Structures are given as structure tokens and as C-alpha cells.
Image (cartoon, rainbow, N blue to C red; front, top):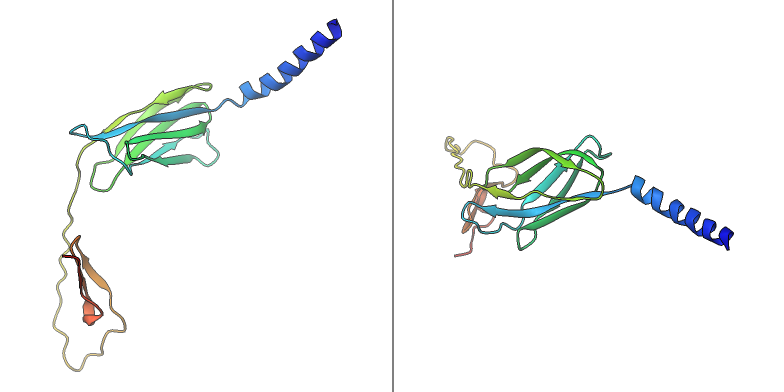
Length: 155
């Protein structure tokens, strides 16, 4: 009977020790704007020298929540980015063992609009025609194209 007890104890240690050695932590949280509304679609990057790939990323869901799993214990920098909002970078996030570290963020509105001004001369009748058309300006309600390819309006 003693032999069976020792065997079971040895088997348990064999299974438990590697699990502890390869402990994986995680980072989770919620991202909101300045008014407290949740923000879906925010890209979160957790970077650290302890990661083989150096950066692990995720995206917030419809409730503004995210979770980046299977992270090795160590010190991380967590970066939050979303178009139209300022980027937030949080340094020194310490992960230990199999812990889940909560890192919440409040993004502030950044540069919402960008204006591009294109100036040029009128093409003379002896200039060669352009080879293809390119989109110059895109707005949420209209798309304008050069050289009359198509003009589309969603109004």
C-alpha cells in the first residue's frame, strides 16, 4: 500500500511541477471614453522582453472589455489605440504567476478630423491624360474620384 501512495504522490508532483513552471498570467480590463461610455474596437498591445514575439495584442469587444491571455510573468507596457482618440501607454505593469492583472483605460478624444488641401494647375490640352484614377478625398457621405471613374453618394 505504501508503494501505491508513493507512486501517486510522484505522479502528482510530475504533473503539478511543470504546470507551475509554465505559469501563464493575463491582462484584462475595460476601455471607456471621457464620458464613461465603453469603447469597442480599441487595439490593446502588451509588450515585454519576456515574450518571444515581444508583443501580444487584442481588441475590445462590444462592451469595451478585453483580455490578453497566456502571458509570461514579467514587466509589460500596455498600449491602447483607437482612431480619433489619443493613445495611452501604461508602463511597468507587473505580472506574476498565474495572476490576472486588471488594466483599465479612459481614452480622450484626439484628432477627429484631418484636412488635406490639394492644389494644382489646370491640365492643358497638350498634356498627356493620366493613366488611372486615384481617390483624392474620402468623407463619410461622399467619395470623389479623379477623371470621372465614378462619383458615388450615400446621401
